[in-house]
Image 1 (cartoon, one colour):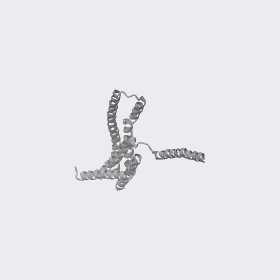
Image 2: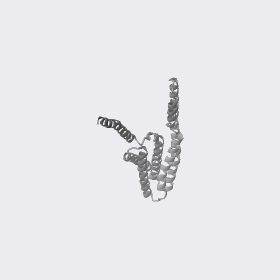
Image 3: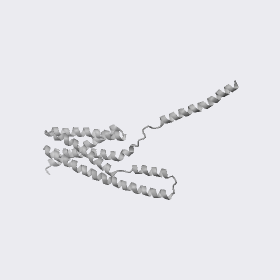
Image 4: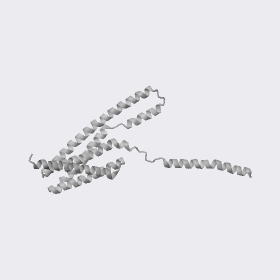
Length: 231
C-alpha cells in the first residue's frame, strides 16, 4: 500500500509540473503580440504621400476657385489648374528630396560617430554589432522614395478638381461640382492616411476636410474682393 501510494504521489509530483509548464507555455504564446509591425517605419513615405495629395488637392482647387471668382471662362480655370499641377508637383518633389536628404546626412553622420565610439569601447560581440548596423541602415530615410511619393500624390490630388471642372460649362454648376469633388477627396485622403498610420479615422478626415474648405473659401473670397475693387 505504501509503495502504491508512494508511486501515485510521485507520479502526481512529476505530472503536475509538466502540465503546468505546458499551460504556461501556451499562455505565454497566446499573450505574445501577433502584429509586431512598427508603423513608425511608414512615417516617412506616408507623410510625403498624404502631404502631397492634400497639397495637390487643396492648392489646385483653391487656384481654380480663385480664378473662377473673377473669370467664368472654363479655359482659364483649366489652364490655371494645370499650371498649378505641374508647378506644385515639381516643387513638392524637389523640396521633399532636399529635406529628406538633409535628414539622411544628419543620421549618417550620427551613425559614424556612434561607430567610432563603439570601436573605442573594444566590443567583443561582432554578430550583435552587424545586426544592429543592418537595422540602422534599414531605418534610414530614402530621399528618392519620399520625393517620388510626394510628386505622384500631388499630381493625383490635383487631378480631382481638374477632372471635375473639365466637362461642365455652366459657371455656377462647375464651381459647385469642384467643391463637392474636392470635399469628397479630402475626406477620403484623410481617412486613408489615418488607416495606414493606425490613427483616429474620423478626426483625421474632419481635420483635412475643414482645412481644405478654409483654403478654398479664403482664396475665393480674397480674389473676389480684389477683382471687384478694380485693382
